[in-house]
Length: 193
Image (tube, rainbow, N blue to C red):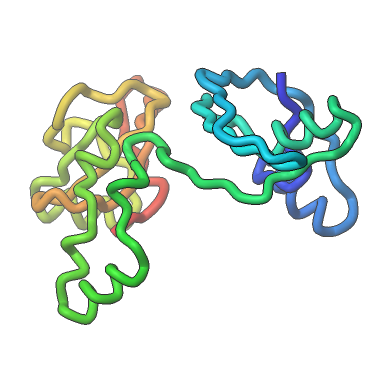
């Protein structure tokens, strides 16, 4: 069980914890279950040490440093944090800001983009294949799932999915939801393109 840090994006009563903390009224957040799949000591030069951690979603390494400091009665904080992987994204595939600038100056910035299908392999992909469907998606209208071409499995109610155009460009992050009559609708939530 881990108590999230006061400066986190977790919401309570519609307000992010970091907003309350910055206003001088930090929230006391309830501990939540997290998993450390791997935690390795890489270097130790007192009073500092370096670790490698492979953790579940929602784990805060700032909270680990805080908790270790409390347990050792000396306080603790992170001096640095390097994320080597988040979902399908890996540090070794990252493009530096300098290289992105070079690509952009050469009119080749698109080379740095990861196709949506590769970036979100676990999500259902729906293709707005015709112009009418694409236009209604851009207006953020809920549409029956049958209006789309499916890539992979059909989304279930409550499941997030991506809506792509016929060229494979991501248009919207969406959610599948059944209406009152049981028709599965795709509700565009967040515009991406």
